Image (cartoon, rainbow, N blue to C red; front, side, top):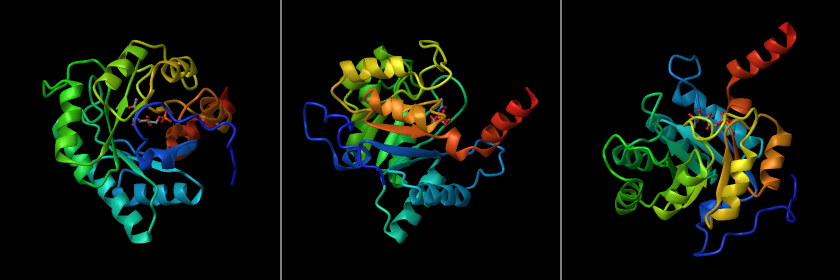
Length: 245
Ligand SMILES: CC(=O)N[C@H](C=O)[C@@H](O)[C@H](O)[C@H](O)COP(=O)(O)O
């Protein structure tokens, strides 16, 4: 167990931070996702991966798809695990595809997610709703918190104005507004921490413990790691590349 009282981010100004976000503060969120057609794309498998991550000290879990959210949250409830689950629903592969509509967001919340991660960019949404309308609709129908997956400072400022609870750097490098950096986009992270009064989560291409630490040091509320922990095909490829270079 590592105690980091001196480096945990200060609570943002404004209304009291909701409990699930307090639980994530200074911690690691492990994103457990397998992609269409992959051998591990099965809710039972992702639940096992999530349980392994919790055993390793994950403060939170991020999981994709209604079935996976249901499976993971049921297993956690049965086992008395209170680690917050962030859910999302990817529909498609380009444009707005991370929980793209209010319907997707409500379904993820109803499946048991404590936090629903949605596309937090300024791009038009497939259902024609604005981000603010999506957030309002989700709040009307559920008690889930809302995480905006953003790709730029302008996205994050707009998402904050739309009333989200937390923003992430998730889409930096994937929307054309920011370069796809080798590691996490620490420059964007620092901008968001400086400009926003909601927690900022570092997500995207955090591939090593040192990079996770650097993100926390740059002011991240929490750090999400997916591929480097839960995607064996990618990790194997990194090693194979090193051996064949
Ligand atoms: C851009 C996009 O679709 N990101 C997705 C969002 O859920 C996932 O594919 C990523 O694995 C996740 O963001 C964690 O990032 P990384 O796997 O780089 O640690």
